[in-house]
Image 1 (cartoon, rainbow, N blue to C red):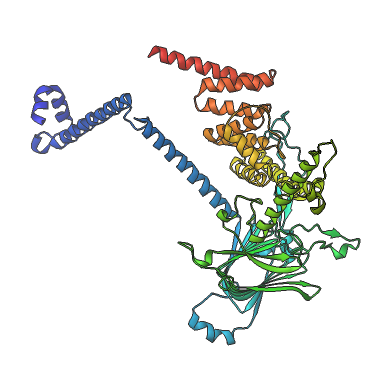
Image 2: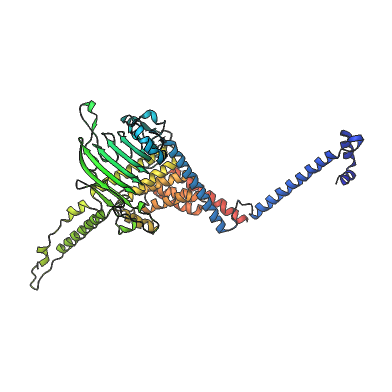
Length: 583
């Protein structure tokens, strides 16, 4: 190669050899080797670029799918990646708000050391205050420790504050209950206490809860010889979930119910007083699975009020198929002034009768069936009274069964029960839905779109407990846009708001689904139709987007935002058609 190059370019060689001579005046072949290597590298790079250009022209560069199946697989992979990133973000966020306290009374240790240390070790008392909980930590986990000893969560923890700051950066909107409206929050929303308490792998100790738990939830798992004391006006533990524990003692000492409303007395030193104690509301419950020797007691003024024991094996838990006996769920609650333990029905055993998200027992199923039967009988009696039977002479005939069978007043029954829910239950569900929606709006205005999606989803899940849920599901299944559906709570508002969040995060298919569902439930609600059009536009379906945006403009012809979106979609459609014609 060097000889050919020298012959073809004698002047260049001479210049090069003149610049740098080799040994004894000979040519420096090392420099020629380097130059040849550099030229070969440049040629290889040019070949690679030509191959990339050719592959791109043929659609073989991986940027474009070669078939419909490959496009679908690629879309699925992208969705999975986005879902994974969202899940990781949630996990990271959860870790960011969790304070874990391990080994407070000492390490768990081995079984061989337990007997030797039991007599020597004195009972320790550990007080948990705000100083033990890091800044921004609101979920408390106490884990991996062994007594004897006592861990006390003091009332000082109730002074922990979580603030939701006001946001004034958005422009005001004119749509009622829409997520993009400006929220007039003159003061930050303040929540006090910890969000949740977790007790894991504790042994031979007592945990005393005197602080406020915002959600009223305590989770206990893999604990042995543990006593949980919930006491005081602040300590609200409406729901306790215990799993895989042995010798667990749960005590409520004048503890408030989850529905308690504190009554403040004139003497400010007395503080709030409890008006509703644990067990006096049907939602105060202890769920447990795989718990041996469970004892539950309630105390009033220092004396035992209610007392019961439970054991999952004695309660008849058995392995079925792949499910172990430890997976069978039980619930202990106050029924007619007694602590009763019942088995929770599996989803398939409820005979398609639902009472919301709360698990159902056999007793509750029978009560719901009885209520439904009462309604049917009352309606039958009412219809019979409306039909008059006459004899041949035109006189009224009194049915024999009318004297024997008492007539149930329809108004009384229907007022008590509306499709397996009382009026009070419906109002409570609607209040909960409204609360979740308001929190979702706050998250949206703060730019936390993923959190807003979670809160809106929780609101929709809560709304699914309403008696009209079957009507909503049936309406959505038809996918037919017609007259607005009468609802106990306007779900189209939540769907439209969640669609806006999905648009912000680039989840256009999900935004389209929520926008379409909002339109089906209420075609007159322009925001749902508008966001459906925006989602179609983002997906490149310009003709369908124009149709949706045109509907929105028909409802509000003076809306500049809709008008601009419609014009932009029309421009995009013309550009796309022009490109097709040029091909």
